[in-house]
Structure formats: structure tokens, C-alpha cells
Length: 114
Image (tube, rainbow, N blue to C red; front, top):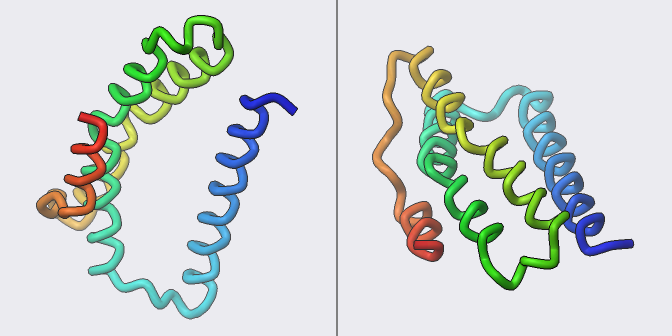
């Protein structure tokens, strides 16, 4: 198994686990409150806004010059993630809201890469 296949496998596993967790909340009486969902959407908005530049920067690193498949994956992933923040903003707009202020943990996440 290549490094790329292992990375793709881990991403797929994380997506499945997240979907299962979210589905379990919904199927167990929908214990997620509107307030929790609004906080989640705000978190996702701030977390994903501008995140593509981190993946593009990683793809541009000279150490990846010979890792073309990984580089291509990072560029594709950056493109896929680039507009996800707009999905969260649209969902918030359905509630007549804008994203809440950025949380400290999201600020730390972005600071790590900047």
C-alpha cells in the first residue's frame, strides 16, 4: 500500500466516523440543539475559510517535487475545500444569522499554518 493510499484510507475512515456520529445524534432524538448546530456551522465557516492556501503551500514545497501523486492530491483537496465555508454561511443564513465570531481553537489552527 502506498503512502497516498494510506492517507486516502484515513480520510475515508474519518468521513465515515463523522457521518456515523452525526447520524447517531440525529437518530437518538435529535439531541443536537439549534444553538449547537449554529455553533458548529460557525466553527466550520471559520475553519474552512481560506484553508485551501495551506494545502496549496504544502503542494508547492520543494520536498514534494518527486511526490507528484501527493502533490496532485493536495491541489485537488484544496480545490474541493475552497468553498466549503460558503455552505456553512448559507446554512446560517437559513436561520437569518451570520457566523459567530471565530473561536480561539480555530485561531490556533490557522496560526499554526501561517
